[in-house]
Each structure stands twice: as structure tokens, then as C-alpha cells.
Image (cartoon, rainbow, N blue to C red; front, side):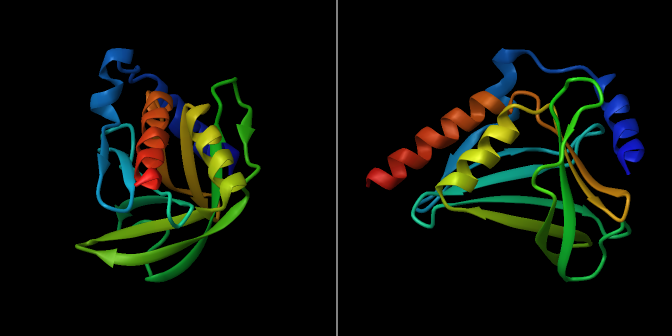
Amino acid sequence: MKACWISALALAAAAGAPAAAQDAEVWPIDADSSACTTSRIGSATSDALVVRYDPAAREIMLETAVEDSGPVSRPGTASLWIIFDKGRGEELDIAWGYRQFAVRSDDGRIALSTRFSGTRNIDQILADLGSSRRLGLVLEEKTVADFDLTGIAPALARLKACASQLAAR
């Protein structure tokens, strides 16, 4: 399993990283009346990722959409392995292990989402996202989604500030 994901990482590393000044454009912050969101549009080297922080519910939701022809193709739930690449050679962070994702069909694609609830889980998922180069979702040794997290750390700081402002209302 590690080999399939690492080969995807090697391809993505060749694409380079945006300058720090572009981080706000790559991971913009949006807010509605109940939650703050940062997202990255999909590209040739990364699937699209949405990170939604709802301070009232005390939860973070990760969302993405993948090709319907991939390893996850039926609505319902799927147990996906969450793997973070911290950018230190082949060292991968697999501490989250397998996690249940809601799966739904969405306009010819498969939408995936999972929630992290409670202060400790919120702090940990934000720390893992902010300290990683890439995030992978894996099912049965097949990469379902692969996310470039370049520039997400400053966006997560802005996301937390946004959520704090919402919580103070």
C-alpha cells in the first residue's frame, strides 16, 4: 500500500509549490452563519479538498469528490485509511488509521466526507493537516484521493480565527 501512495507523492513533488504569498489564494477562507471553510481546487497534482470548521458543533469536516470509476463507487459508507506525508523521506503518519467516510453520488462523481469532533480531535487533525505536505485516502491498497497541502498551515490559522469569531457571536 505504501508504494502506491509514495509513487503518487513523487509525481506530485515534481510539480513544485506555490510561493507563500499565494497561500491565501490557494486556500481561501469563506464563512457562513455557522461555519468557516478553506478549500483547494483540484489540479493535475491534487484532488480538491474542503476543510469545514463548525465551532458550535465543535467539529471539523473534510470533504472531497472523486471520479465515480474509482475504488469507492457505491453510496453509503467506506472505511478509508488516512495517511499524512510529513515530508521527511518515506516517513508516513498513519496514526488516524481507518476512518468511516460518508459516500454519496454527486453529479457523476463520488462525494466523500468525514467528521472530527471534540477539542482534542479538532486540534490533532488541524495539526496534522498543517504539518504535512500531502494527505492520502486509501482503500484496499488503492489511492482514492491525494491532496497537496502546500500552503495550508497559514490558512488553518485563519480558519481557527474565523471559527473563534463565529463562536464569539
